Image (cartoon, rainbow, N blue to C red; front, side, top):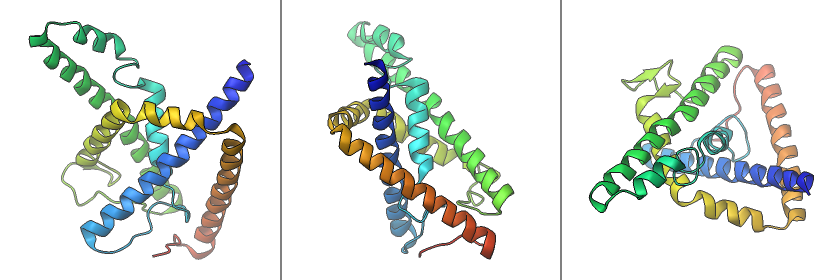
Length: 206
């Protein structure tokens, strides 16, 4: 039973990873279209996935959990037990602490991926060099805070319902979906790496 539960858990996390990576790609594409008025091929893959989104959210899940039921749950429970006059401020303080901690995984991932791709493959997937508070063009203070805010909001409101929905999906469907997506993503990654090595540039669809 434990092995079966572990396998189901792995499938669930894989589905969550792909869902969030797809959502991240869609969000970036829409924001870029609204901000600059043109479509942009986001990420390194040709498929509509920005894997850094799925990786960052799962990292926060494993490291912190949700604000109410994760690693900060004892603080949240203590804040909830305070008198009404102090309760709101104390809960806000817990969420603020969670927000600051949630900023770290995506910032470290952006730094590692941005610098790694630029150093090893000479590819800039994004560039924050135009911003005042940034590091190596890969991490910016404003986008780090945006990451932390979105993850905090999502973890506090949408994470548990989303997990419950994914758990309710048939195991056969999840296994087929994860297998198909993983094969496609690995093939996509291999194709783009070969294309980069042969042509010296990153393939962009638009």
